[in-house]
Image 1 (cartoon, rainbow, N blue to C red):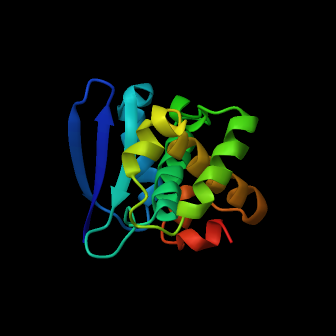
Image 2 (tube, rainbow, N blue to C red):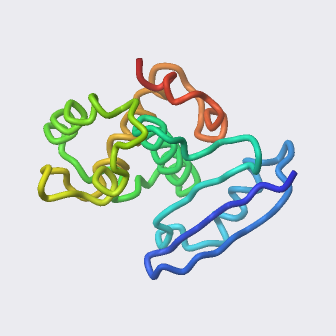
Length: 160
C-alpha cells in the first residue's frame, strides 16, 4: 500500500512524494532527505492510508505526532534539531507542560493555540512542537528506538 510523505517548506510550497514502503523504508527516506534541502523543510509527516500513524484527536496525540515528525527530521538531517522543536527554555518547557496537562486527553484543546501560539493564554509560538519533541526525545533516551520504529506506538506510551 502506498505511503505518502508530505513536505511543506518555508515558502508554503506543498509537495507529495509517494512510494511503496517495504523493508528498505529507512534507506528510502534517507535518499529522499538527501535529495531535499532539509533545512528548507518546516513540516515532515508520513501517513499510511487507512492505518496510522495519524495525527490523532487529543493534545497528547498531536504532541507525539509532531514530536515524532521533528525526531524524524532530526534523524535524516544528521542530528540537526529543527528550530521549532527547541523554541522553549527548560523553564518555559516545564511551565507550559504543566499548563498543557489538563488538556492532554482533550479533543477540543485548540491546536492553533498550542502549535502556533496564543498571546492571551501566554503560550508562545511552537510550544506544541517543542513539548512533543521533548516527550519523544525523553522516551527514546529511556527506551531506545527511532521515529520510524515508534511511529505506530500509542501516544500514551510516551507519557503516563
